[in-house]
Amino acid sequence: MNTPRPPVRMVLQVNHAEHTLSVAPDTPLLYILRNDLCCNGPKYGCGLGQCGACTVLVDGLPARACVLPVRAAVGHAVTTLEGLGTAELPDPVQQAFIDEQAAQCGYCLNGMIMTVKALLAQNPDPDEAQIREALRFNLCRCGTHVEIVRAVKRAAVLQRRASEGAAS
Ligand code: FES
Ligand code: FES
Image (tube, rainbow, N blue to C red; front, side, top):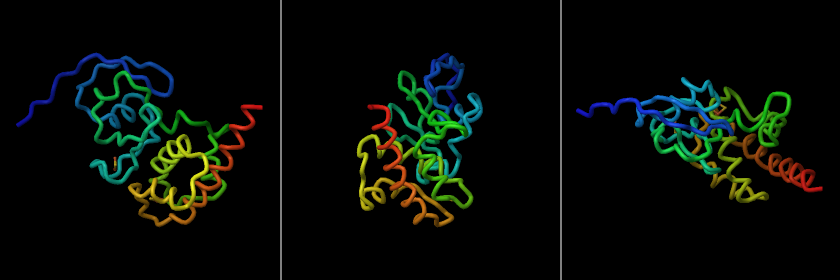
């Protein structure tokens, strides 16, 4: 039987802020985010790295926080849904999901939005096949896929506009 490793002091960078914590290094990052840092955007779904509900960005790339030990996040920039936008000023991807009403229960949306954020950072104008490919391992049990794909197309437009506005 494996004995859990004792807590150690570590510094995590989450949503541009540094947090010093004393935690067992093998603890899943998701537990630390939700229980210690009150970031409740990432959701616990399968706990096995298979559904995508817990997705966060680590150095801009999607990562499954339910299976990522917190020690692996040290020295990297972690972004959660809370780090994207606010209710008053949503990120373009969040705004697009709102505009397209791309949710039923909403449980999968954290993972969808974070994955789309990473997709658009690499490919600002994805076609439908590329959108479906990027989201193929994000599960939605409500079957909101048509609205979600529509939201991603809108998100790409909104994000390009936002980038153009920032550049002018
Ligand atoms: S909860 Fe992490 S992938 Fe399902
Ligand atoms: S909207 Fe319910 S799981 Fe996707």
